[in-house]
Image 1 (cartoon, rainbow, N blue to C red):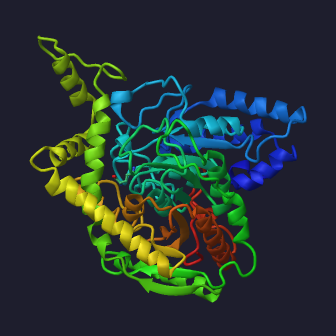
Image 2 (image 1 turned 90 degrees about the vertical axis):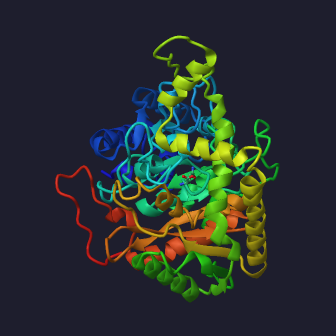
Image 3 (image 1 turned 30 degrees about the vertical axis):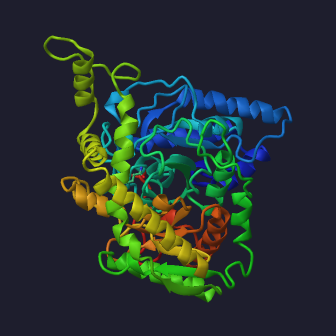
Length: 515
Ligand code: GLN
């Protein structure tokens, strides 16, 4: 019998629609997989086994009654813990929200439920989505399924690891500076940060509101497109939500599989996002992918984006500034934790201070202090004001690049997965890791990360990032699916099928150089 956890969401959806497989069986297979591997991987903070099976049974009944259901109905999904769910705790990886049960669902979660997807549980993340490794989770890190001694990326390491370890075919993530794309890169999965405003942020616990976007995590470009179609579109509850009518991203992905899809596509390689500081194997796989695109008729052009050099600096002022303001709502009164001061008097201010001291971890405190400082009256222009000017320059760099090319490409991350502890003590090293992903958030343009092979020196996944102009998300799906098809033809299958089978007693050794 087919292992249901190894199927793509699209294939599983096909089997469900034809009733060859029931949603209860598909859900149970994933819960069993979670049971057998998640003690090691720790992708989940909360697993809602019984609820998932009940939801699945409901879908099966409706289907048996002849009801026409949405394309992904009955397919299990994991949800990043940054998203409010009214039937599962939502902690954003923080002790300050331990056990918090939101009174409502995030819009994207409501849309999942309406489309009949089956939530399996909530995934681990760096506290309040601050980090690139999940080491800042208050509940312990997630481990990379390719090597349990290494980080799965962050902040959405849980969602990426859940998908890469076959615990869920799909997951939701959020990306403020790369938290969908960088975990995708280091786990060999696919992740998309949509155009800012393309997917609702209502019910996504805010990190930096002008940068945050919710998006899909999957094992194929088509699967990401199918999920994007479910969660995308206007939401009156989100004041920054675009009112556009969007094309189907799944159809855009399918269009990429046609012959000649890459003919004449102008692909811009960003000079500033390559070369020095990039791991040799990452650069090698990236260049091979460019050659592959070129062999299929794409035109490779080098473009320069001189302001990208300042992107990390600008981001690490804008993000803490917005985060310090957003996190002011955790005041010990309205949400979650309340800690009384150890000695009297018990004043509002002292309760607030004791609660925030106990409830926030060191990275969150660091960013609140940085953000408060950057926004303080005497320094506002020098720091926050300058960072906003850099943001404008970055937007202009994108605009002038997109006059010459259809998409921009770079490696998704400078290196493959690093070891636990390697960057934890040095916040700057952790921040610099985001160099490739941050520009897209500052400009609001969409970005997709997809796997392009294993680095020869360490056998770990390498990702390529595609970026398109705002609102042109569909272009990412077409070109992404075309590249994915070329790579899979070369490898004779998907890259993730080479990942270690964590449930086996002996690890599956991937053949040297096969991918
Ligand atoms: N690593 C980035 C940060 O720490 C990205 C965060 C995110 O996208 N949520 O801010």
